[in-house]
Length: 249
Figure 1 (cartoon, helix red, strand yellow):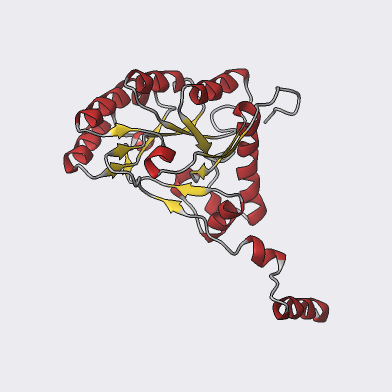
Figure 2: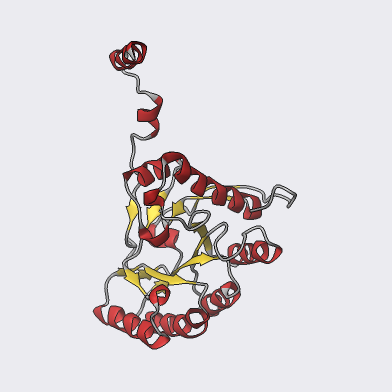
């Protein structure tokens, strides 16, 4: 006890921080809305999943881009052959890929080490599959606390929430989600940051095409999250890896 106290005192005297203080001193920025006027960043959580292709095609056909917040092991392991193809497809078609953490756990209930484990495993997967280290992370359920923000800051990431929810994940029918989009568009805010989920067939095939049409008719430019913020989407961009036995969940 005495030795520990003396160490802490010595560090303070010489202007040094303890490792714990140093690694947790900063809080990551929390993004809740876009900043570039007349932009909308359509975001899609919980994939990669089977409807990713249709989501991408709807966006590309309209000259739009989206942002996919991927999990590592939610609906299916990100390292499955099908999911590797999906992640590459999204990235190769100009969409932004970002972190939704590994197993979609509520980060606000986890320890420091558990939070980092949820973060680094999906970051590693994205680096392996498409060669990028994401600059943005969306916490599952939108739940976070200061420990999560501190961990994100250490990892060089910003937290991303939303300012509009299509409510597809809480049971909204396509008609209800469309009505929510109509209501938001009628208010014509300068920007919109919508939450959608690529894992629902009705979102991909009914709500999204409707939303794209209505948003563009209202004069919005449909861009990636990074573009709507005027920021870089990735901390680094490198060369994808080659699948081997370590690519597993």
